[in-house]
Length: 394
Image (cartoon, rainbow, N blue to C red):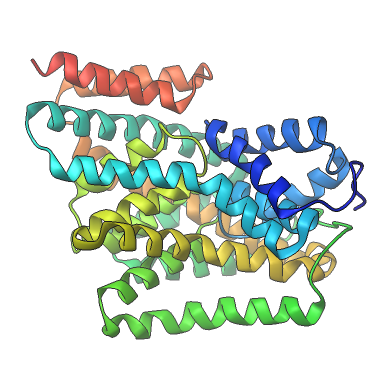
């Protein structure tokens, strides 16, 4: 892919471009990809529309936060490894700092007003997760075969609510996809341009796999190692969008590290900040390690993003072989259907069960959900839910 702009850039240029995006990109990963196109394709002309579409296709094909992976890959291609690091840091840092600050403030205050804010954030989470589930179901379960995979995964998860069950259901979704979804079209992911050598790509993929396998065994070292393992595993298994991280993290962190209320308050707050939804990890890490909030936030943040970034950098040299392999495409179709089921199970428990306590709560959620159908931004739903909870608490 040849840049239509001024050729190779610098890490400083990349950092400035993505800092602007990190401060202004509200609305979730699909909206982020639109912001990226406006800024980097239309205005800065770093690449053309065809090249950008191919890059997005590759990142949608992989587990991890798609918009952050696209940004990281754009930074790589613009200014090499330092450019990739600059893009990820600048896009992630603003919301990560805001989420860590929310953890500190929420943990140091109490009282009726704080309780109402937390309750409002939980109600916002119900509406936003329901909207995400509806959109994902339309896209990822368009036929009866994938719908049945989703229903089976969701029903099973309601009875087996522990972390390894989710891993097993994702694996089962892959197997079911290979058996039932052979007709699913393979994504087009042929990107021309800067990429690591095949040897470097293989090394990055090996690092990804070694960390995924070894981190659970290192949990005995200390709480920080266990926390890193939880977030790395979640980042490595999230297909289908940032909202799917909710059930993966909830099963691992609640109740051992925090309460459901605390977890869902952070999820609701994450909708009100710009940047990637995965910066919820900054809040959760800070809450999980209250004696060292900055350390906990940093470890969780790096751990949850690392798998997706390792994968996108490592697989770019092999993208043509991946795109042409219909077995892999079918497996991904099955995985995506399974995660729709996992998100459906999470919507019921813990999101809805722990948030709805009255008829008024249901009204607030329904209004928020309908507003999302009218294309209002999630941040507006957060302010509506919190405002209504505060108003009607007195």
